[in-house]
Structures are given as structure tokens and as C-alpha cells.
Image (cartoon, rainbow, N blue to C red; front, side):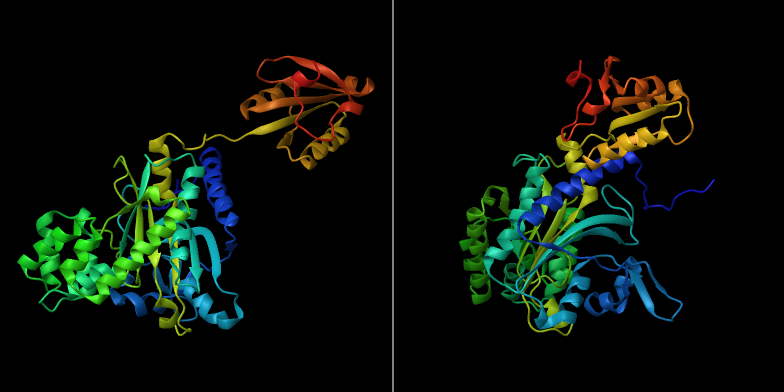
Length: 432
């Protein structure tokens, strides 16, 4: 008996049908905005991540040396990969570039609620425009997908901030602050106790008094108060940009889902502007459902031309928890529209009927095990077939088939000339 690896999961058909329904719903919404699907590799050179995040990131990766002596890693996120792809094609790509992808990723980390070592994300990115409308469109696509899943304003919220507001506030302090370390501390605020949080800020260069006053100003949603606190052009410009994005979000019809939250920092260093995270308003999903933001410097950092960019990664594991909490998770059940039951020497006609039904777009099964009539009927019941089409020798002698409704048990004989029809999904009720 072999056990699966910790943090890696398998999905049986019923659960997979629900996950597929969620993925299809998200991707249908994305395509409506003109995003194009891309495919990306499972392996990248480890240097792609260490160049941007430092050597310590390797401890969080499935990194190893391949047979060619290359140091590679299973991809832990998509953004560096799509940045590399944009750099590779450069000016040949029509801008703005609007891409999306749904696929698995891997991180070697502690398994906990909504966090696994193999996990699935739908990533949405726009490259080539710094206009606030592009940030707002990312928010609109994400919000639209959530609503399409059956969620409402009472179920989720987007907490929005701006990295330059945080950076500018820190820059305005008298102490010599390591800005990125302080922002990473802010990102951990909800995950550690207050004393540990203040210690992280002090380690980043703030005095204890500065840490307390900095934290206090983060609690405001009055953007003018931030400008007064910092008294710098950087913060004033960032506030203006945040307001522009929120105004655009209102025009896209999704402002109601957005809450200003300066504690939302996003831990990755490559974020440069507006950042946001989605949370369960009921608080039952303890971590962010998903997040994203603007990363205008990453393409240039990988050797490309300066290219503004914004994106979001929708995590399917935490999203499934939110949908289940809100009671909108799809039914975990597979479906079979028709089971074509063959009795006697009728295989050729049975398969012809099954083929015609499939051509009409129906889910159809037939016997593959040489079962008798009773066992086939029992199998059809076990797979929740809605309708059984019985093709027996006597039926064919009458130039007919028998249609059986599995829920009621009622059945009737139908002329072959009438079944299957050219469209629709006929059941017993259509012929009784």
C-alpha cells in the first residue's frame, strides 16, 4: 500500500467535477474581457527566483539539479515566468498584452488551511499600460468571477493599498529604515502577535515610538491624513494613483467590493503600486483568498524594455473554502444523460444510437463489460443516468427502442425514426 505525499492531493470524479465547474466559470469571465490563454512550463531555472528574492527562497522551493547539471525548480508562482516570456518576444507582442492561465504550482512549506505543497491558481496579467483602468479591470474580472460563482458583497471584499504609500510613510521617518523589510513586516501583521510585529519593524530600522505611530496611521482610511503625516510628494502621488484606481473601479461597477486597507502589503518585493487581497468577510477562511497588484519594474529587471504590468493570482484552494462557507460550492456529482443498454445481438445499432446522442452534445455511456440486462440497469442506476435507452432484439424487430426514466421507473417504446431527434434531450416524458 502506497501513501500519497503530504501536501499533494488527488481528486476523485465527484470532487473534480465541482472544481472543473469553478475553473470554467472563472475562465469564462476572463475570456469575456479579451484575455488570451497561455501555457507555461512546470520547471524553471532556480536563478529566475533567487535573482529577485535572494538565495533564502530556495528553502521554499522544490529545487534540484537535473540530469544536465542545471539547477532547476518546480514553479512556485507564475509572474516571473510570464515576465520572462514577455522579454523573450519583446516588441513583437501587441500591447497591452492580456494573458491568463490555470495550472498547478509547488512550494515546499507547512501544510495548513487552504495551503498545500501543490496548489492551483488562475493567473491574470496585463502588460504594457500603467493606466488606472488596467488595475481596475483586473479587479473587475476577479469580482465578476466571484459573482458568477454565486458569491456576493456580503461574502468577500478586496482590501486595497499602495506600496508607495507604505514606502513613502516609512521614508518620511527620521530613522534609516530598510523599507522592504518593514513592508514584509506589515504583510505579517495579522499573522503574528503585536509584540512580534513591533519587533519586526524595529529590526527593519524603526524606533519603537516610530513603529507605534507608523502602525497607528495605517489604521486610517482617510487618505488626506496620510499625506499630512508624510508630507512627501511620493505619498501624495501614490494617494492620487490609488484614488484614480478606485474611481475607475467605480466606473467598472466593482467599487462596492473594495476597502482601503493599508495593512495589505503583499510580501513579494517586486510589487510597485496598487496591491490588493481578497478576504472572506465572515472571517472563517483565515487567510487571504487571493491577491495581486502592480509590478512595473519586473520586466525591465529581467532584461526587457520598461513595461508596466498588473495582475492577480486566484488561488483555487482558498477560493473553494470560501465557496463552501458561503454555500455556493457546486454539487460534487458527475452526470450521465443517457445509458444505452444493449440486449442480445444489437451492439452495432446501440453504438450508432450512442454516437448520434454524443454528436448532439450529450453524456452517454454503454456497456463495456458484457453485462446482462439486470446488471446493466444496476450500473446505469449507480452512475445516476437520467435516461436508459434499451436496444433489444425485440425492440429492433418492432423498429423501435425503449426509453426508461430512471427516477420514476416508467418506460415506453419509441419508433427508431423518432430517436434520437435532431436536437434537445428527450426523456420518457417526451414520448409517454
